[in-house]
Length: 528
Image (cartoon, rainbow, N blue to C red; front, top):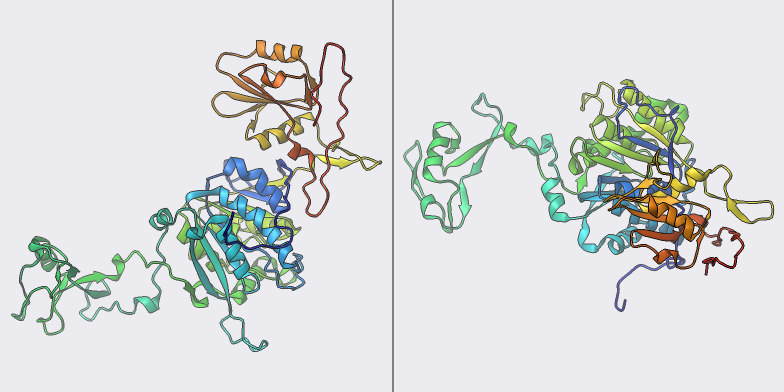
């Protein structure tokens, strides 16, 4: 597109192919005895493959995405290869962000922790992917509370980029944050009001309304009218009710302009703002202490976020029961906080610490043994559960001659389930009809077969279909013209995406399919 403003980098235009994978529950690793019906998911595996596996089922269902991706700082992290060149880092982030955005609800939001090294690149990338109009703000988190003297200029903060699918809907759905004591100091109780601390609020509104222009006589005798260009904020009958209830303040001398009294207990909170100091949401030291309280000093995670920081994000963006997703789960903080706050969650982590950190941490949360972080403020006592999933192995393998073949670990059922995942169907084989392997919307079905599809075979299936049923058949090859034989049956090849290599930086290759022999009365539709 001409005159399009965009960020370009080496490899941006190269297509990234993602092989659909199944998510297979590992019952021995799941912890759902106390909550067998839980929707919570902990997934071990590459997050791009995992997100692809989740994309169709959870599209438009996630209320809040929080991710803390590698910052590309050049540091040698124990758990991540964080020394990626900028273009590689952008190629890493782009397809993941695209899927995460598709998973969000209309009032949903995505929150991304980042530092100065990639913040500006990430902002432009997100503007391009999500739309600049969807940008909400850039939060500033004070990650250190003590002075940093090791650098030329001390690094004491990080950013959290925030985008919303629909800014107006997000504003209507987002929650206020509790008022800090510094903000609440204007609320006092000089008269020992039994209703607690209060503050006076001017009782005027902008504009002119005839029924809100009445005189008000103060207890000391002074008569007040609204200032020029303004009116009282309420009609006279409502004012009299407030006066009788002791909700009007006339100043220390009882002759001042009337103010309504607002009690601190009636303030639901304040609108979030972009400065998040460490005394409100924690810092890196408190985060490491939380990790040590769970795992001990021998298993410290390098870059944890404090639970109070994640609590603030989840509180603003969600309500109990909403779905939270973190695809760079790290030490498990987001899942642990979401669990304590009564949110549903999906956490994805590719490293071994999915077992050594994430699972262990969540097990302690469920058992009520995690006493750190936000446990006390949330009055968390334990309970709940999660299902642990592994990514299924790749469909593709190589034989001794380097040819691409179907992985022998997969059987026909697994291949059919993978095709169903790719096509947006739910794998649910029928016990009565072999071709009803997967179901979709409006009485539609999917059948996957590795055999060559003939006219006679298709006719036998058609004869067992009922009126109003629609069938998609994915096969390796078929007679010429079968893809147009019936209006209620669509015939197609097994999706090539399932037969392509998904790893970055390697050549694509196709499955070496050997077609059956062609007989005189039969034509085969070969791959073009």
